[in-house]
Image (cartoon, rainbow, N blue to C red; front, side):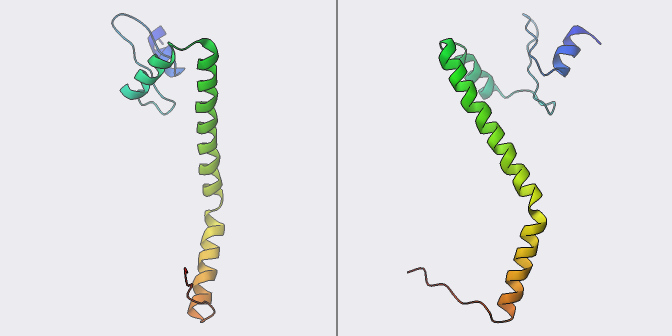
Length: 99
């Protein structure tokens, strides 16, 4: 495997005058807007870069946790929905008055 391929497979940018592409974990290239955002962020002082990076990483981790929580709860949500519909069909529910 060439150095370029190794860098791409490690999800790292390869810098050269002729070739610079950053690939995401799923193999897709980084969007132009994200590259521009990172380029602007790289101009910030180191402390501000670290603060911004921490916010981004926490947001991404939070999204993964939510995704996992929903994925893990699909059976439970389906059971709750089934139970609620059964109660409704049995006349055990009441209309809510929002006021």
